[in-house]
Amino acid sequence: MPTVHLPANSPTPTIGVFDSGFGGLTVLRALIERIPQARYAFLGDTARLPYGSKSRRTIARYAVESARFLVQEQGAQLLVIACNTASALALDAIQDAVPVPVLGVIEPGAHAAKAASERGDVLVIATDATVRSHAYATACQALGLRALEKACPLLVPLVEEGWTTHPVTTQVIDVYLSELRAQAREAGLVPDTLVLGCTHYPLLRPLIEQAVTAGVRVIDSAESTAQMALEQFGSQFAPAAPDHQPELHFYATDSIEKFERLGSRFLGRPVGRVHLLDLGG
Image (cartoon, rainbow, N blue to C red; front, side, top):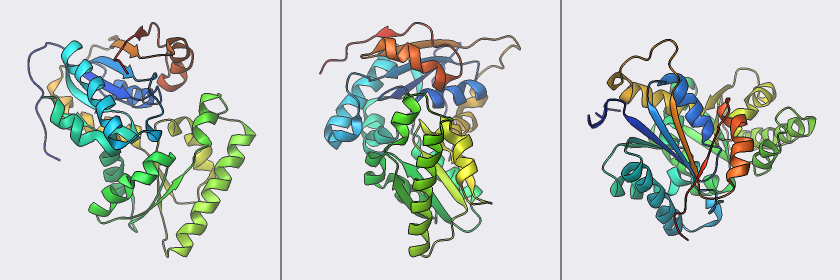
């Protein structure tokens, strides 16, 4: 993809990160690791999740409202849509609504799968809404890959319960991947790559890597998205000092106590204060 230049109207450009909840903090975590010198504004639209049960039109309206807040109120000069559902169903609407570059999580995941796969056969695990959109299959197909998607609805609540190393979670992952391997055999696929198509799933990566067939590479779409952001925009930031601490601002439309409590699991550091934001109904 070609490099896109950020507007040069701030000495420290702001990257806005949007999610329907707080799973997208795994994307923010990966961004901070790669572009620590940026200022970050993260918005979780927790009052209106889950997006997956909404219509495409409603998802687009919600996502555009959040995107405009990050651009107009927080001065974001790059938007990262750290939500698979919004990336699948509202990316075009967001791009049309704001005058800054917008990067979703699905295309970077597909590109990383393309780079990793030798056979061109890819598996994707995601939420039901993302699988129903077939966004990953479409993105993979555009790159010449064959992709088989599977919804894994139990994984998100297990992560939010904190059961990221629990034996029950291990069993659930084994069941899902066994079913997916059987479906791949029926489809005549010999997959060598598995894409984590949900921003909660990076917290389960160690268990998933233990459960996959030997030789299958696991692609974290959060890391892939951050890497694409670095490749496209990283050269436009001044180098960070060795002791530099990123400037982070957090906003949520509801459940700020839960955000503050659980957010550190996803971010890998204390979230601190989360500001309550009212975006309307």
